[in-house]
Length: 216
Image (tube, rainbow, N blue to C red; front, side, top):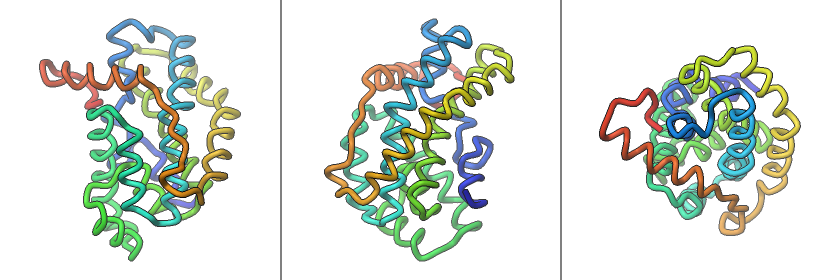
């Protein structure tokens, strides 16, 4: 991956995963994730659903078609909280990208969708299907993994070992996303995760009622 892709994959980058736990905070609050084995199960599930969805849309966004992709990703994201989180991350990246990587492609995207979804702006900036899918797939698990260290006090080396063991699953998701990059937006895959949708909505309600460490 080039420098842009590496920075976009870093959860410390503006708009990255440092304020979003990908449903992990709510899962921890409900005792669904309590240790390294349960975190591993959570991350695999997230990668194969939300991660795979984001990866294929990032790959497809390298081909343009931004307005169609925006509509189709909205349709595949039934949770309002999930949609809001995706656009919040997209806005964060857009602010930085205007300074770091200004381009006609970025300008076109922001004219079409002023508040782009996270996978779509990543695809537009990275510009290559495989690299774009890698960024989004990797981000889908590293955000929650970082959250687990902060929320549960897990051993960072143990958490990083889980991420390393996910390499074959990450490769599978990325390969499929790359394969589907030229598919018409309406025909792109639609992996769903009702459990993550419910966690996102519950977290959104609780975040309005009390202080939470993560926005989502």
